[in-house]
Image (tube, rainbow, N blue to C red; front, side, top):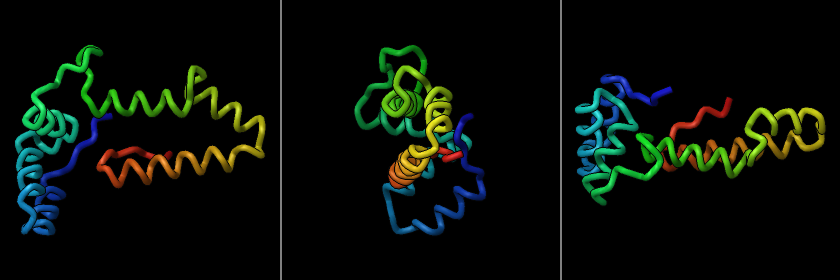
Length: 117
């Protein structure tokens, strides 16, 4: 899944943030990349720090970050293993739901789209 904004969404954000110069620059970059958030993020990151090769193949910084978050939450068992573990022990399911909810909220604040489902 490649996170993407439509041209209508970008235009709405441009109207909403019309007095925010950095936001306008980021939205212009989004338009140049047809709403592709990963490509836009990588372009803006490269302009700021000059680095897009993260030593892990051709993955974007966003994808590497998401992989690290998954590893931290799920460990070697992977997400399926953790879900199976929590379904076998219903008492811990609320903790798992809280972790997912918190992760989605923190990611949203920082502009990283993560689907809680």
